[in-house]
Amino acid sequence: MTEKKPFSYKYPHPAVAADLAIFTLHESRLQMLLIQRARDPFKGRWALPGGFVRIHEDLHAAAARELEEETGVAGAYLEQVGAFGAPQRDPRERVISVAFFAIIPSDTIHLRSGGDAAAASWWPVNELPKLAFDHIEILEQARHRLRDKVRRSSIALRFLPPEFTLTELQQVHEAILGQDLDKRNFRKWLGSLPYLRATGRMRRGGQHRPAELYRGIPTAYIDSSATVTGAEYSGSDGASIAQAYQRGYQDAAREMTTAFESTQRELLKRVRPA
Amino acid sequence: MTEKKPFSYKYPHPAVAADLAIFTLHESRLQMLLIQRARDPFKGRWALPGGFVRIHEDLHAAAARELEEETGVAGAYLEQVGAFGAPQRDPRERVISVAFFAIIPSDTIHLRSGGDAAAASWWPVNELPKLAFDHIEILEQARHRLRDKVRRSSIALRFLPPEFTLTELQQVHEAILGQDLDKRNFRKWLGSLPYLRATGRMRRGGQHRPAELYRGIPTAYIDSSATVTGAEYSGSDGASIAQAYQRGYQDAAREMTTAFESTQRELLKRVRPA
DNA sequence: ACAAAAGTGTTAATCTTACACCCATGG
DNA sequence: CCATGGGTGTAAGATTAACACTTTTGT
Image (cartoon, rainbow over all chains, first blue to last red; front, side):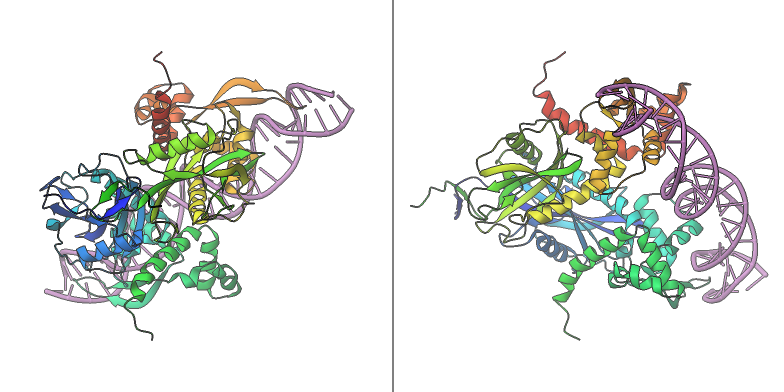
C-alpha cells in the first residue's frame, strides 16, 4: 500500500501549484471558468483550474499550460497575481499556489474537461458557487487587480477579438467595473488613449446604423520613441499619440509591452517565419 | 560524503524561499538593505536578504521572520510582491522565491549580520551594486509597486516615526518618486487625505521656525462607518473625513487596514493586555 | 539682524461630469 | 415608417499646476 517516493530532500519542501482565474466576457457579463472537483478534498465543490508546476517549468509556462489544457486557448493574456501559501490551505500536504489571472477573448470559448475535473463551466462573477480551498480569496484579489488595471491599461482589449466596436469595448469596462458608463464621456476618454485605431471598416448587424470597427495598436508604435517622433509631425494623429503618451500613458504602454511579450512567447511557438 | 535526505515525495518538489526588498529613508534618500553573500553561488555579490520558508510556516510569517532576523525590527510593513520562479534562477536546485517588500521607519535602523551574509548594509536605490540571482528584477518590481502605492495610500507614513512633520513626509514622497514636489500643492493634497491629524505639538530644531507634528489616524476612524458617522457632525473634521472618504479614499483606507492587520499580527505577540 | 526652514492663496489650465438629440440601417 | 443601437458637443464643476512672500526661531 505504500507508494514509492523517489524524490528526496534534506529539508522538507512544499508542493507548488499554479491556479488560474480565467475571465471572459459572455452575454455582456464578466464570467470566470470553474471546474467541479471530482475527488476529495472538496469533492463536488467548484474550484479554480490549476495544477502542479513541473520541476523544470517556469511559473508562467505552467499557468499557460494549464490554461491551454483547460480551454484550448494558447497565447491568452496571463498575469501573476501572487503566491498563496497558508499552511493548511490544502489538507493533503503543504501546497503553495501561485495564482494567475487570464483573459480569453469572448469569441474563443471552448472547454475541455481535464483530469481532475468532473465538469467545467463558466460562471458570472456575481453568481459564484461556494469555492474549494482558499480560492475565493485568490479570486477576489484577481478581480481587484482586473478592476484596477482596466482603467489604466489597454487590458480591456484582451476580452475582445482583434476588431471590435466601441460599444463592445464599453461593455467590457462596464462588466468589469460593475457600473454603467456614459457613452459620450467614455468615447471622449478613449480618444485620449494612444492605443486605439479606427479601421474604417464597419460591422453591420441588427436593424440599426453600422458600427465602426477599431483595433489595438501594437506597442511598437507608442513606446517612448513616439514622444520624439510623433511631435515632429503636423499630422494630428502622431502628435496626439505622443501627447497622450507624455501625459501619463506610460502605464498603458508598459502594460501592452508586458502583455505582448507574454503572448508573443506563446505565439512564436506556432508561427512560421514569414 | 552523501548527506541524509529524509524528506521524500512521489514527485519532485521545488524549494520555496522568501526574499525581501527592505526599504527605508536615510539621509533623505530611499535606501535598501542588501547582504553580501558569504558563499557560492554568487559569493561576494550583494543580494536581497531572504531564506527558506519552513514547511508549516505561512509565507508572510516567513518574510517577517527573515526581516526580524536581519534588522531586529518586528511589525514593519510587509507586502507580497509576487513569486519568482524561473527554472535556473538558482543554480543549485529549483527555488521558487516569494518576494516581499518591507518598510522600516527611518529611526529604526539597526543591523544584524545573519548566517549567510558576510556583511549587510544600506544602499541608496540609485547606487546599487550588481546583484546576485534575479534579484534586480525582484527589486525593480518592488520599487515599481512602492511608487504606485505612495500616491494612492498612506504607505509613506511607514517610513516615518509615529509623529512627523509635513516636510519629512514630503521628503519621503520625493525620495520614492525621484522628483521634487511643490510644497504648497503637496500640502493642499495632504489636506484632502483622511488619515492625517495635527497633534498641536511642535518640533523645534535648527535656527528656524518650529514645525508642527502630525500623526496617522488609525483606520478605525476612517473606515466605511465614517461615511455615516462623520456626516452627522457639524465639526468640520469629521465631515471632511467622511467626504474625503467618499471621494475615493477607500483605497487608502483599505491599504491602512491591510497594513494594520499585518502589523497587528506581529505586535500582538509582544503586547500585554491593557 | 540674518540665516534657515515653516507656513500660506490665487489664478489659469486641464480634466471630469452631466446631459439629449440626430443618424443609418433592417425589417 | 418605425424600432434599434450608433454617433456626436457643450457647459459647469472639480482638480491640478504654477508661482513668491511672510513667519518664527537660533545664533
